[in-house]
Image (cartoon, rainbow, N blue to C red; front, side, top):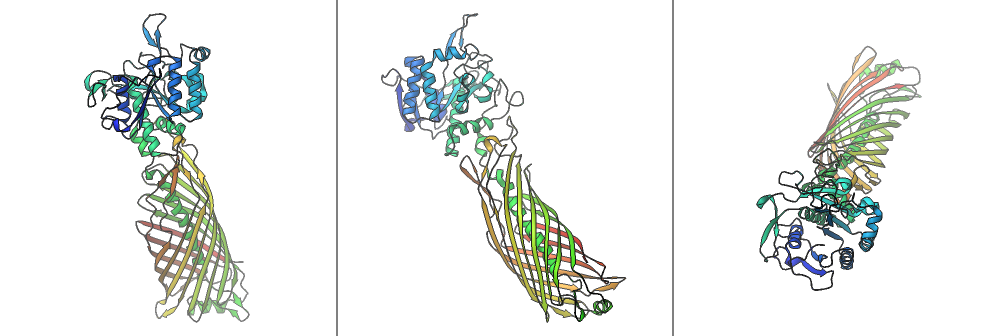
Length: 620
């Protein structure tokens, strides 16, 4: 909505779709104002959005309510959903007599309704179509914008699809002529409008020729910068509504002037870098780290269950007497312990805290928790037990203030069988996840008026099962070496979530499911128990290698206003190396407490994790 533009200018001629004059005469003749504004919106060299398709509506041919209404109606009929309005109504100031902007404090709501009834009807029709209006605040150096830029002040239903724009000069301060945002601050921002001559002005297309340019100042020059930015946002987010695009433009603006939204600059200075950065994959890195941390919690509990399955404390007493598990070192000391026991053994119960840590290039995580269990069945060759516990996995994205916490409930089974040197260990668990992700470092929100904090809440479950089978070989003077093969299967499924508190930056997270399998080999070395007082001590070392298959790509695919944002930090290497060490301190009496400590390290691609468990088990 402007004066007629030069339709053949080289800046945009190939994308000019047509013009309309509200007096129903031929469009034209071209004038500088409309040509300059058109070039700033979509010029190939001087424009903000050089791919934009342009229409021109010359409403100055019938200046007033009727002309404005006809212009909006024609544009809506063409399918136009974004209007740039670099114009204002002026009148003679009743005190000074000087022509100035009619501001929103000059008129009451009733006066506006009586003055532009047809234009208001057309604007409301456009609102129902989702049309976005961008208005210049005006050029009278006043504390309030033009009443048309401030129409949502009278009619709040218009605000979601309305932007007001004031102008900055070359020093990034309010231009000397510009009306401030004033009471329109909540839907207002600033953009370059020039303030001076030559290069202190805004250069754009001239109506004097297809390859001519000229400099100009005004909020009329600032508004098309914002209109072009909305066009870019629409290209980035083709599924977003104009109301969402308007909020993106406002909420990505750089805060200037007073902190926060202020009556001079509104939301601040238009920031195209922030606008484009909203789709930076780094903004969702923490979600991928949280997925890996949940798998890490499963793995650490599985290691603890496996530790108990293959524990070297004594087995239950059979009818013939006490006998250790075949997987345990059978030594003179342990046989002496067996001979010393005359009372039947009860069940073994155990309890252990869990501490874990992972470090990758883009994130880190920590896991703490406690797991306990009971051996339901224990004989010379067999142990079966159940376990339950809680872990909390905390994730932090490197270089950001983004974090995640998963509170997990685990329920597990474990078992061990051994005979004639052969052994099989098995574990299984199911876990309930309750995950909260908090984003304080949000791409596109750098230096803005608000400090958005996005919070997402998920729930889901995980499964992990492991089987290890091998043979134990006695080594005189050492104890034993046990080569084995292993298989681990795991999976997790999580509900979707919509982020709250992040404003225009809020992400939608779809439901997700991942499944993996490891197949590998390993070697366990054990020392002979050393007896002292009423305990015996032995050390076990474990080295294994596995090949990971299944979902090795754990990248998160979030959505911002319908646009997918997929992280790039979730690729897991297929080679997994584990190193473990376990120290066992077993009691030599029926009522004694057995202690163990286990350390495990895992190396995979560019990540490394460590876990520590220290616990005790006792008979009752």
